[in-house]
Image (cartoon, rainbow, N blue to C red; front, side):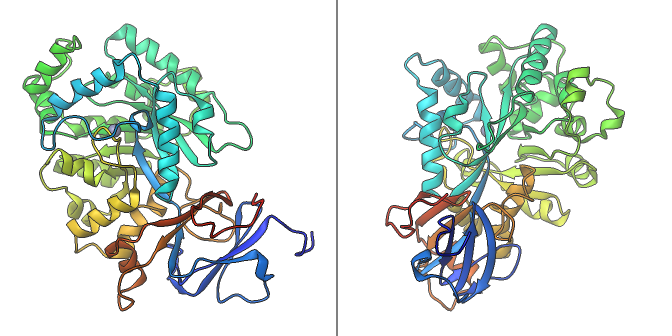
Length: 438
Ligand SMILES: [Zn+2]
């Protein structure tokens, strides 16, 4: 196809291009063809002007990766409950919200997808309910890991959950869609460890070490979380006591060859090298950190900065995770505990909370590390030739004497445009006016 008729090729110029995997480029130009990044250059020439769009005073970044959310709550105007509330008081509110008869979770997921692209997010680790809707997820060309949430205890329920997981893992997206299936055993207090061990070789995300109450329940089978489970009719005698988060993390990261639980069906669907996500990890103890650091399986801790702050947890163990070189990705969690679904806002909050973390590393957590956490680092997470053209343009408003990373993280500039798989999915100013962009 000659350049003059090739409508699938266009170029974006910005004051800064921040590829993440390589140093920022002043006046960089990113060329896109057929939904993929063709080249990343400084002041590229030789382009038909009509196909080059100048984003002006902006930084062009890889699209952000939200490694953990629950889009079903994206229609909430504000988090449930009050800041600083106990998680054992908050969970019943979530349960009640989910049971609200007039709820339209499909519309909420669509709203969450739309809000994500307005925030520059192009890849999502989504925790989905059994009635999740593929068309809602496919409403925009985002890369979504659909982790089916598994909740319930007891042998009969374990059997049901494994069957549900098996069915979900067999699903495949249509050729032009970008979602892949995974599973999410909810948390140590809400799903049996036998289920986790049976499914552990799958792409997996699990809330672990989220609260002190959870640790108390595991260790002593008592405390506020026991009372909460009893009130919800979900208490099972003899399940807890003498356990710690490390036991669950071990169940997830253990070498697949030692698994004695894999069913024929799950073995067939096995993706042994698929990353595992330990979501929150607010109260990871030394033993848990040891297990994570020694894991042969790729494992990521997903820090949800503003949700952590909403509950007024103790300081996040980020320094310890970094010291042990345990990979950290970033999630917003849902709007039931967070004001919005912006990973950029999470990164700015993190940068302000942890000024010692180098800005380049902060940005990597919300892009390339997140892509790796979703098993998609070959596909997205950085601006590199061959990867999907998943891009976010951020308005630069901070002093130019700052580094480009700092201008993004210390500024308040909003998202100007978002591109997913080469398509302008958010472009309110018409900066990328070429039509059609495929
Ligand atoms: Zn969550």
